[in-house]
Length: 361
Ligand code: TRH
Image (cartoon, rainbow, N blue to C red; front, side, top):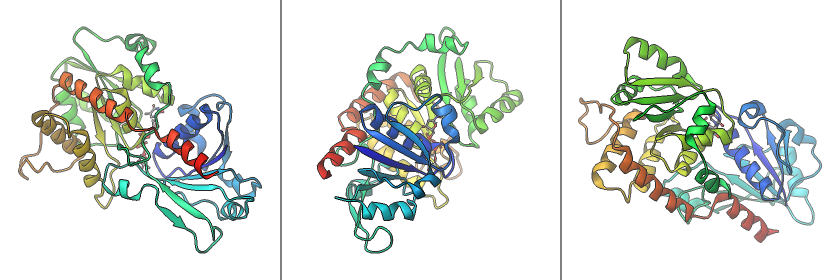
């Protein structure tokens, strides 16, 4: 089938990260995909080289004069489609395309209620068309998560030490390796203190942290802690970074999901929203993710995640700020693998999209 994926880059890299990962997955499964994007600049490092067969990167503005409309049209994260393109969707014969809005990922209860809901268009260029909401998620009553068919097999044959050596790095005896992909965070110095409590190699992704870490370590040296500034990695190499580490600090949406597929302990810095909506979103995920965990470690992870996200921990009184402390990683490793097993039991997002597209064609 022919797919038109529309992606508008608001800020950071999640919009293009998720959109591109979906486009690549569909093309790898034999579909013909046009990826319409307004700012493709991040693809230079996220997806260097020629796009894979079946996948064409197109400038958003070119869609205004594009005569052909695909069988399936996906707007990612509610990015409003160009009206001219919507008009052609309405005029498409013999039948209009399947029109989907791929929503943001959340574990909140509204997702299961809203997944698959229709939004008939009663006016405007799309009059007569129907748009369907498609919600990714962590449970069977959602659209699932992006998971490339070969990913887990690739990870099973992955050699972490060889990958680190490619970066000129070598793990020292008894040293843990930790990755950090974060938004600016006032608790960073406390994290460095907690990490410095035992031999640690910290791999820092581009962003504010790469400026903050050297300054903080100059002000408060941590003899057990050494760090390395990473370049921007391609998406497959970013996966390998997560696979090579014992603990991953991730953010936003796509890296958050990749950390779960890595099957390693992780800490999620949620995308902060001005209205504070990110708080309940974080709590909803922790409720699901920790539902099978033992109470003690579960409490420790909640406290750490809330502290890293600057959210008050109800168990701590207002005065006493939660000092960042890292729970036992060995126990957390077992939990991470069990959680991944659960996620593998949920049909992946692209497979569900393909089924839906076949059903309506
Ligand atoms: O960049 P982000 O913070 O994106 C955010 C979130 O998506 C958020 O939900 C959205 O509202 C906001 O953008 C607008 O984090 P995220 O989602 O993890 O996206 C980062 C992408 O960059 C992901 O696909 C992984 C990729 N990446 C690489 O490929 N190489 C790298 O070196 C790094 C650091 C990231």
